Length: 419
Image (cartoon, rainbow, N blue to C red; front, side, top):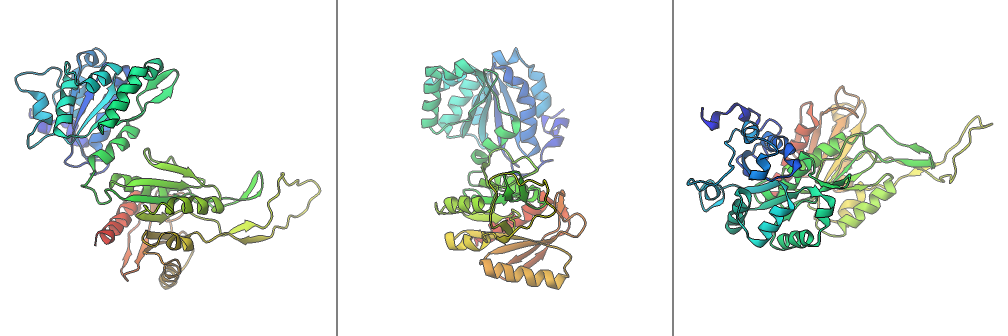
């Protein structure tokens, strides 16, 4: 049976096509973290990559090479033969790999790569890849004392000076453990998509979730936004090659691994964080997907307000700062995507409101939804967006998963940024 038709390859591209056409050599060393290698390989494949397993002799004592062949659909390389496998994968050949990912990597392998020693399948492949200019990502896994050893620290520093990426392990239970496959996948993305994705080299800032405005230390004014749409945009931006910063209010979903996450509970803290980031003048796209509260208490109690003997509580509310209206003032060249949630409006009312809000904020695009419609409100997996653009174009998206809506929204932004 041809490996090109191996049944395990049926999963390629089932999660996304962001790594379509990418070839990755997965180097596996003699760490117990090797038990995660099949899952990691499958994660990469689900996003479109073709994965070629390469194992050291020590790794073969932890997992069987047949397991990696099952996982990837490619015969596992466990020794170098007359086929000069290291050259076939990473030499000056037409179908060379796009990335060498060594996960897990032992302290032994790190030291050998830093010294240019080639006495295993993985280290020889690493030397070839480095000499050929192929990106290399090393994911260490070992006991914590080994990770802290001065020579290991020095070797990692030497590799980083050479431009080799080293992903820090997860320190837990006295061990420097291999991170989860999703974290490794997102660390590999920038290396694989350097100049080939719609948002390669772009810095995208996404606001997500809901803000809260305090009444007292334990009570707040807020809304029902979950952050799902914002996180879908952040995830999609990463898959499109962007460096992503998420300014997150209260959220009910896990942020994607690999984003820079900044917590901003209140509208004031969200504005302050936006100012700090936009002052750097390196933000290409700002997506204002957070549901920012419109009102805040004129006076916040420093202690919990007692309900004892109280029949009513009167609050004086004042408007919160209109963050959206400040973005273009702070960074005129940033492509601004506004969001607007309306409730029970006609198509004409929706359009009129969207155009007015886009103009007021000087936004380049505004995405509007009617949260009263089934499947288009807060805390849902789907959304139906109506897109309006500064250039006059209007696009009505069908009800779809939020990830699909995010892809279309960012593709439209990328198209306009590139024009």
